[in-house]
Amino acid sequence: MVPPSVHPDGPRYRWLPGLSVHDVEPAELPPNIIARLQATPAAPAIEPSGKGDIPEGKRNETLFAKACALKQMELPEETIAATLLDLNQRLCRPPLPEQEVRSIAHSAATGDSKAKVGFLSRLLRDIELWHDENDDPYVTLSRVSTAKTG
Image (cartoon, rainbow, N blue to C red; front, side, top):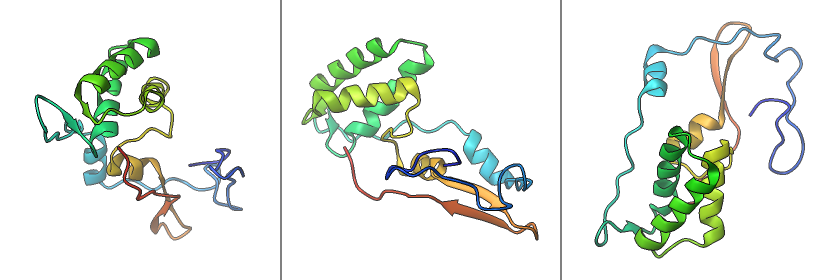
């Protein structure tokens, strides 16, 4: 999160004096971090409970991955939502509520930051990399949820 983003509780983020992107040169990322960020994510592992069923605990993550693949095909949000609703009814055990599936489709289609994604994706989304005046690198974690969804 960077200013002027809005915190979920309402207030806007703001830069600390002398630490804005206009005041501080960003630190170089280590090569191994760059490689991990550029790597193609593996498909989510699904442990089927039946004929291709998506078990509880994997529903949100799997449907979001499917929605992102559809988004990369430049399909409209309505098509993504219809596809996810069908997959949800046919494969999710138990199926997610319709509004939750529509929210997943919207998140993928619009790039909504509230999308339910895996831990690593949430972590990378919720960090700020920076360095101090001595060029010592730091990472600021905003807020990382540990709640299990899906």
